[in-house]
Image 1: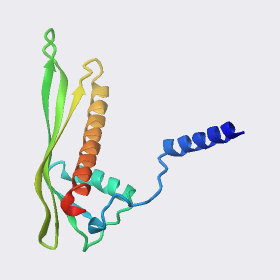
Image 2 (image 1 turned 180 degrees about the vertical axis):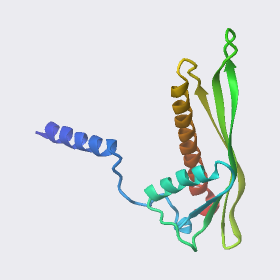
Image 3 (image 1 turned 180 degrees about the horizontal axis):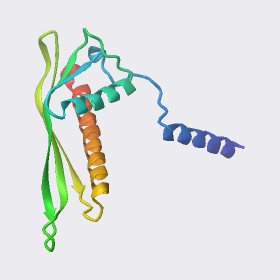
Image 4 (image 1 turned 45 degrees about the vertical axis):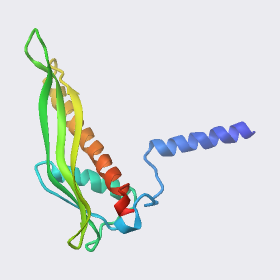
Length: 163
């Protein structure tokens, strides 16, 4: 009987976790950062800002006009070939790199000075299917932005000066 209850509970939790269910706690956002807003600049700034805002909202943050501001400055993504086929001369692997800086301020007061942001991710090229390559590259950039958002939030939410 105990085992059946345990299996039922474990199965229910697995289903809830698999569908994206979470409790809205807001517990990881320090009180000093409640209401955090995101402002970004640069060619990839808007996409990164959206990824960060989604993560903050999942954690219960509601941006307020008078809240602190997370600045994502000069955000851009560069790409370079890191592996080339010796037989065909075609690039097989690329390195996508997100560049920028992160800082936090509130009412003209710096809470976290500007720090560089650099996130890298490799991307393998499928020369046999150019259409799949575009989809792969889009997915790679989405993953890069999600990883950058996680790193930004980890840096900001764990900064001793902001706790």
